[in-house]
Image 1 (cartoon, rainbow, N blue to C red):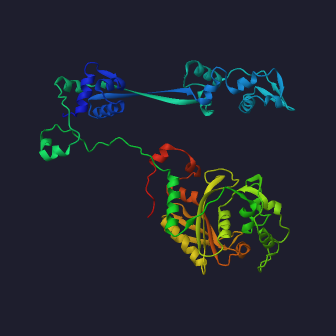
Image 2 (image 1 turned 30 degrees about the vertical axis):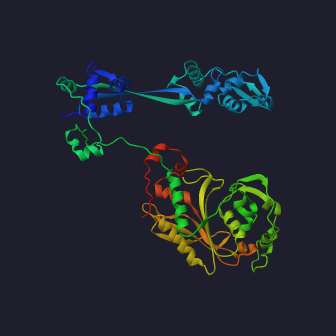
Length: 481
């Protein structure tokens, strides 16, 4: 059996002792520990050594946990800060009240009646306190009762220690007894060695091309960010410019300028995050007001009723990026305009695998002389084709600010037809108050749903998690066909 130099060095180091951990072998071989582990595993595959992996875990206090060392958990500190009763208002002045009161109630240590906090007399140390006391005394604690609670609270963090023990086998000893040539081997060749022919007399290191190399994990862009960047490149290639704006918008731009009636359900608390701030209305807002009340100078009848300026001033977290589109058009009312935005929007949604309270939306607008509904469908088909979706269809839809309106769908193997957004031509009630005289094609697409389809996910929340293993395993290909 022919041995590599590293295998020979490993057997020579193990010969006198028979068995040693990797740290000791690294010192004997004057090599890095990671390299010795690799040498040992390769030698183990050939039966020269046995490699045993020992994993131990301990839990050490985090930065927050260290702040409580010697003092006790927050709830214990707050509990010991008063006698039998205390007004809630006074207890809330304690620096740890925000953390401690909730945990005292959860553990049944206190009862609150008529604004007064009273001890229940049932405050014996629980498993989490006992485990934290052990960690405080020794600097760490082994896994056991109460540790999981401390881990969930972020008071301790796991530290893993891996020790490899390497033992020489009878086959390894037989080869060692026959004598090993420890002459250094050449792993690389210089230009001079190749030109002079000296390489012919060198002891060359042997390589086994059948062996799988050690995996390398280079830095990678998050898979979701790669898809966002790809969409941005596609739209730039299609001749679009990018627009941007703040996540806080007045109701005027988020709703009223888009001819969304002030009593529309989407403006209620269950769908929109309203803020306490109020912004003044822009110059010329009266034209939007008139459009809502009686149709302004167009043939529209408007929504009727009385339009409230106070309601339009109220700020919201933007519910769609269309609020940026209408502002961009108000600043650029003359053709041609071809712009897009990729931005986060916010809605009050019940969070589940397919819904989040915040997500990304792709907004696009095209305003030019003579553009029509057919051009809109062409833009969307071209974009989806570049994203890798070959089959695209459109079904009629309804949106307060576009007419006609459609909902694009793409065909996905195994799922069928999937709806990915909404599109249409801005109504005259939207464009007329800003002096826009030409058709405006507009669309808003749910990017996160496109990303789920491209990445093969079933849970939308995966896009926003810092799952290092998933990021490593996700291919970096663009996904275009």
